Image (cartoon, rainbow, N blue to C red; front, top):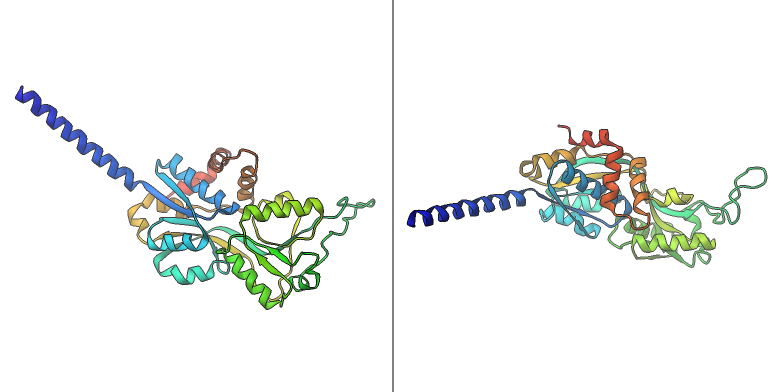
Length: 302
C-alpha cells in the first residue's frame, strides 16, 4: 500500500513538474506586438501575428494603443515589437526620444507618404463627351491655398488621433502656411474616413490628414496637396522596431521580424479585404498567406 502511494506521489510530482515546464515554455513563446488602429498597421500587425502563430507555433498577442504609447511600451520592454514606425519624419520625434532602448530592424515597407489630402473627383461624370477628364470639384492644388478657401472647407482640417505624428505635422503646417482660418479636428481614422465618404457623396469640400498606402486611394481618386515648404517631408518608410534583447530571448521571432517586408500593392490588397463587411483582419492575413506562399517563406528563411 505504501509502495503504491509512493508511486502515485512521484507520478503527481512528475506531472506537476511537466506542467510547470510546459507553462514556462508557453510563457517564453508569447510575443507581444503593439500597434495603432490605422489601416496600414492593422494589416501589418495581423500579418505578422498570423505568420508567427501559423508557421512558428508562437502565440502572438496584439495590443492596440496610441502612437506615443506604442513607442514607449516597446522601448520599456512591456511590448516586444512594433511594425508601425513611420520614419524619418512622421515619428521622428518618438525615435529621437526612445531610439537608445530600441533595435531598428529596418523598413518593412518603402515609399510611404503623409500630407493633407482632398478628393480628386468631379461633380458629375468623371469624363466629358470627348473622353477628357472633367475638372475636380475641389480646385485648389496647394496647402498655401487652404486659408483663401477656408469657408468652403468649413474652416476644418479633419484629422485622426491626436498622438499621431501626422497630427503634429498638420499643426506645424497651419503655423508655417499661416492658416489663420483653419483648425485641426482631432478624432480617429474611422471618423475621418466616414466624414470623407459623406463629403464625397455630397460633393462637399473636405481636406483630411492622409497617408499612403491607404485603402481610400483604392476606393476614390484622392490627391495630396502640394507642400512647397516640405512640412510633411518626402517619401518615408515604415520600420520594424523591437525591444533590446529580443534577439537573444526569441531568435526565431526576431528573424521573422527582421525578414518581414512587403510592397504597398501587397498591403493594399489586405487593407481592401479588411474594409469588407464582416471582415476579420486575422482571416484576411491567412487568406493573403494562402495566395503568396513564396513571400511568406522568404520571411521564414534564415
